[in-house]
Image 1 (cartoon, rainbow, N blue to C red):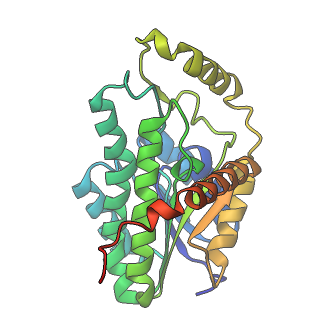
Image 2: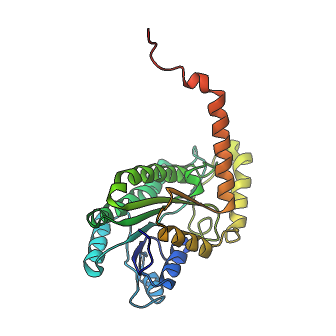
Image 3: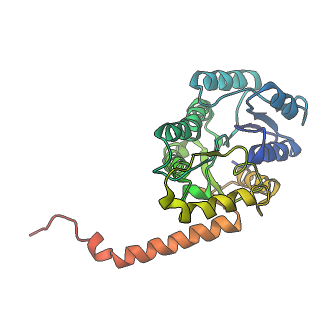
Length: 282
């Protein structure tokens, strides 16, 4: 499926950052956009972008019943959700030993379970139509882990595995699935939207404090342009052969390439051990 005619987009977390940038870009191309927001003020702002084509349901993606209700209402009123972009989520910063387990649970409730809830609500409609696009915004932190954001990386790694499995399960139904892995973009991810655990163990100071300081100093000054990320995602949507993964940003590409190089070296160094584990045969 190559998208050229106007389509219906459902974008979660559309009030700011990449979600808002993508909503603006899709509206500029003539598409209708359902952009989920968290309050009435955000709804009014989003819907003012393009009256009648910008619709902003108020939705908490951790409310599974609410998700199903909104998806059903959109399908019934507008006929289809053609493109789903799972963008809602947040970052958590903290050393693993210092971060409470309830912070991990909340991170997964939003980033993982909330995202999967939306996908599972939309999927039956796409499957019956035998077409659709599902795009999940993960992170370069879903392919490469970094110290100080372990809970966040764990949630994004989980989405990567889910997305790869889903892609294989629904390919026969004409549904394309892609994970998008942005690097550092000029959003509020590392600013006010970041949740941070309190510090308590001085042993981690040398490792973590420079990272926290650098992240805060560069918040809002990152090199990545959300509008250009949105253009890249629309190019992906319009492709007849979308990839399983789309890495966005030179920084993300560099980190992933470095990890792949390290993984290849480790596999080569340990190949004899790796291949030594089968049952001995006569």
